[in-house]
Image (cartoon, rainbow over all chains, first blue to last red; front, side, top):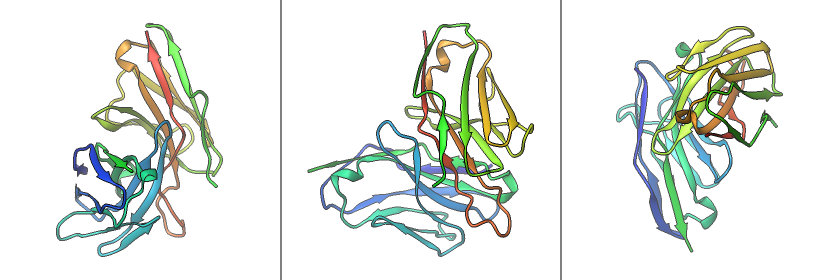
Length: 113
Length: 117
């Protein structure tokens, strides 16, 4: 079945460091891919998405490229801020599955000043 | 903006009680979902609904039921609460994937942290 695997955390970085959070997926068809962010005490918010191979999603300085050949959707940011501290979830969905979402286990990011 | 609201942010119930968690969305979405979130396990799908009165089991439906009598409202019911149901419960909604729909990402409510003692 469909699934998402993302790197375990926590990830601890200093402010202005480069961020990469790895995400790989398994899917039988042509999924759409997402990154969600969860700030402490809140629900999940959509960060970015990509709906087909080679698409790049971007938002708030974060980017991720849909790589079908490596079944990956790694999240990157060139210079993290303390305010980026949160839990990040990679996810996929497919039309054939009633738009069910499959989430990774989440990666906690801590950014220190 | 899409808004998904959940009836309570924090809830404390006793073992054996029947518990109702309510979720309401205001964007006329067809799909609604209930997840539980536990440390180290990420989000696990309990039930989802793709239309009024329709429901499908997710990955962990045991001990739960759901009700969707109106399009905007999706209720999660714990028939007899147990301590292993202590968790964060998240509701989400989305458009059904189809041509002409601008987006179909899931929109989440703020969550209900349920403690069963």
